[in-house]
Image (cartoon, rainbow, N blue to C red; front, side):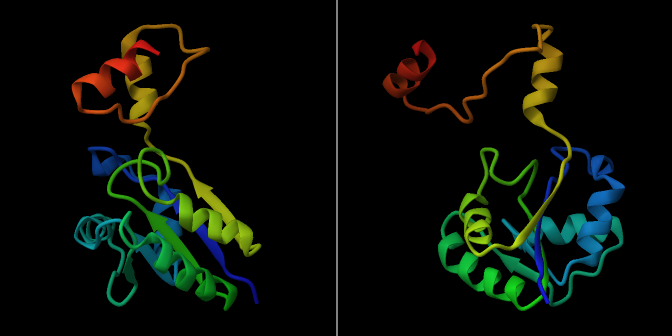
Length: 151
């Protein structure tokens, strides 16, 4: 029996933006891996989804170790949903190591898309949206920031 990894995008400021498909994925998961259990518990409570015993913290500081354990659970047939605090995992957020481990193990991966700060900003800018580049978070320090912005 094969489990799966479901990468679920979460709202970026308005909990009403959580899609019905995201609610279904989270409600049906055996395990909900998340960047911050407190934030995810709030999202689940808002959506009427039970969190008890299903949340596993997976963030930048423990992702390597947790990815291995979660992939083992997927290979045992469990459905693992992964969310970050806001937006889509891997897009300026943790998740790359977990997804890569699942890919290497041959686990089925689904993505539930959702709100995107990048696209919201692009639309609000009024610039043509048929071609753009996304650089993620730019450095905070002066020289590094200036170098990135000038490149």
